[in-house]
Length: 245
Image (cartoon, rainbow, N blue to C red; front, side):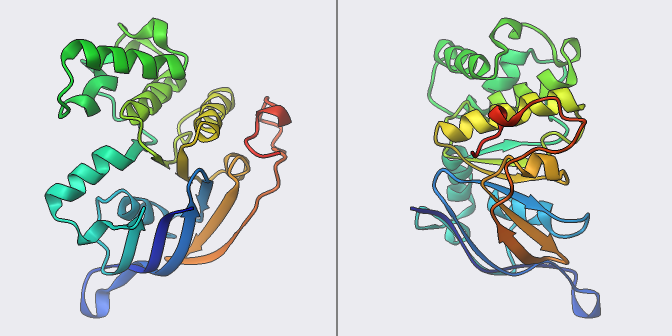
C-alpha cells in the first residue's frame, strides 16, 4: 500500500536572483510499514524535506499525499489535526521541557485530546514501557542520560500511536552504545507496523533502514536497498539487531 506519495515537490527560499531550491522536483513513494533512511551532506535538503513531510513547511510546488489526503490542500486547522493523528516526531536535541518529569514530557502530545488525566498518564506510562523507561517516569530530564532522554523523546513521539514516525538525526548527539539502543528501538517500532522516515548522516544507522534515499543539492539522486551488515568497529551490536535480514 502506498502510504506516502510525493509528486514534483519543491521548496524554494528567497526570490529573484537569490532563490535557493532546498528541495527540487522530488518524486517518490513510501509504502506502509517501510523504514526509509534519508542521507546526504549538510545543505542537501534533508531537514527541509522532513519538515515538509511533517506538515510544518508549505512546499513551493508539488503535492504530498498520505493515505490519499492532499496534506497541503488542507486548512491550517486540518493540518494540525493531521499532525496529531498521523505523525510522531523525534529530534536530535530531544526538545524535552527541563522542569517537567519524564512522564509529563511524554504526556504533552495528549494535551489537546479529550482524555482525562488518569487516561493520559496510563497512555504515557505504556509508551515509556515500550522504550524501557517505565521505572524512570518521575525523573527530570537532567537526572537521566542522553540516551535515555532520546528514548523519552521516542516515547513522546509514539504516545498517540501515530502510523508515521519522522526522525531527524535521532542519534546525532549519542555515543555508539546509546546509538545502538535507539536504533534497535526504532527497529522494534517498525516491526510493529510504524512507517519510519529517518534523516541521518551515519551510514551505519542508515544500514538499519530497508531503503535509503540520497539527496544532493535539493535533489533525490539515488535510492535503493542498503546492505544489512553494520561494519563500523565503533558499533558494539551485531547482525541480529538490524531491522532487515
